[in-house]
Image: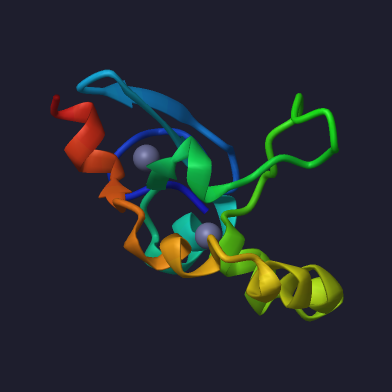
Length: 98
Ligand SMILES: [Zn+2]
Ligand SMILES: [Zn+2]
């Protein structure tokens, strides 16, 4: 499905920068909102211990995903877990109009 705002598919992870902060779109949130949904990079976490590859989905989506329940439980034990929900959420139009 296409984004309501730009020509890119919703499942494509886009990167953007605003006011010196780097954002990435979450494919799962974007699909849900029919528009690219961006969060700061910290909302994704890293895929490997070296921290070199960023996760595709935001932490909230990974918690929702049944197949990743174990990761979700690990995250809930993380003292930083509650921070997930205060991450800034930007829609595609808010970044492209900048
Ligand atoms: Zn878009
Ligand atoms: Zn998400």
